[in-house]
Image 1 (cartoon, one colour):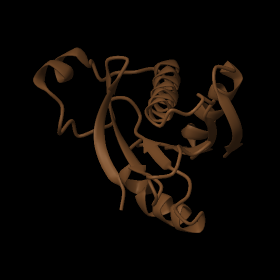
Image 2 (cartoon, helix red, strand yellow; image 1 turned 45 degrees about the vertical axis):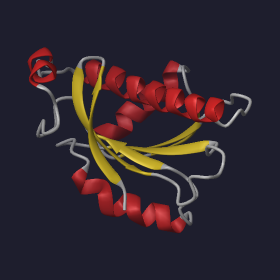
Image 3 (cartoon, helix red, strand yellow; image 1 turned 90 degrees about the vertical axis):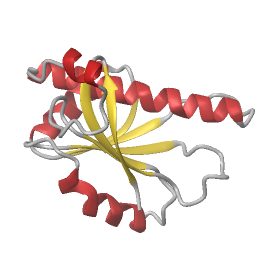
Image 4 (cartoon, rainbow, N blue to C red; image 1 turned 135 degrees about the vertical axis):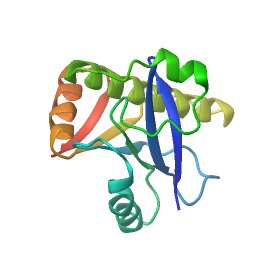
Length: 153
């Protein structure tokens, strides 16, 4: 259950874990739950929690986690990507990195709607933050760039 994959956002390496909905034939979900970790910022720690949440919601809502930028084993990245990624990031960099991820999810949502000939709609995010991830969630909400339906800290 779920897919773990590398993702380069804004030139910063990260790992994601995505557990999509059970029925992918349905129109894209209106909500996406995003888990933002505390230190050490790896997604592996949160996989059992995400699987439990998905089961609780009967696998109807996509749920993902994203590591902190630079907090990855770098498997699956090209040599060029690794060289571009300096690996030292401030808290502000981490917040902007998560904003890139929400934009990435919104773009994927828009593409799915276009492929299904549906009217584009805004994706609603539910952010779950643990430790420093809670701070990141609150800062993302303050940005007002995204439709954040709830923040759980």
